[in-house]
Image (cartoon, rainbow, N blue to C red; front, side):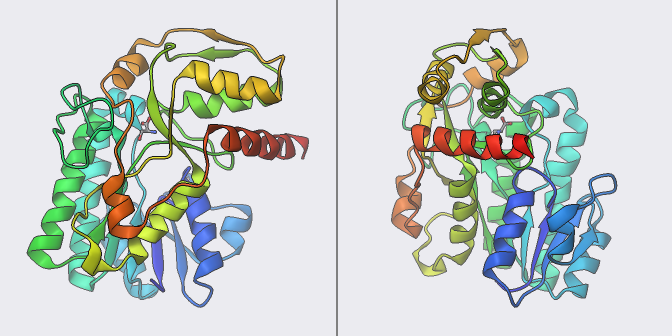
Length: 318
Ligand code: SER
């Protein structure tokens, strides 16, 4: 990796991944791809090049790849699960049509491609606990349909055309820099904002609903390490289960109360999000990622909670 294009650089993952890549690959072009209305600002805009790259335009992707001699594309454009249920046509257009554009440009111009998959790629008939790497993937959400399609399409381009496609199935990602938008796991981000602001949190997900989650620093490391991994060791490509923690709302609430004892949470049921959460695994088995590219998470629930609270307090004091 030397010259990298990040499509969706101003989103939850992109805003942090772009900065991290710029810190590592100091001699390369780390290009912040953005769409109109979501232009990079502040340090993201000032610390490196940016280019308008709408994933639905193969031409814009190709132009940025040519201009900056891009060798690796991080394709982070997507609608999250709850939004995708409300806009399924757009979710397909971005998630699958957009990926097709990226893969075609990558095929022609010899780029490696990272496209995140998700715990959302599993469905009701997937084994729920320690979900294996290779198992049934029949999701009933449009988000999941785009993710499974993306895994298949990416593997197809690897086998058929030799495009170096790789990916991980992200759990719910928790971060403090840029808020996520419209995911099912996002309650586990919102709860920290409420706690630090001194508000009562209204939890849309029922007690006892377990999902895999991950703190952003671990997720960023996974995204970089999989692209740097020795290809000869990879048995799988699209996409690796990765995991670091699994919890339900009661567990994250208890973790926050260790640091903010007065914090209060009450339940306010959200049918759409609950149905989506119920169709996803409780916890993934990530042994293939550990064996094939030495994946290992660093944060657990309490170390994440401590760091989130500390970082959000700094953010709100500015
Ligand atoms: N965070 C995502 C969502 O909830 C899952 O990958 O949509």
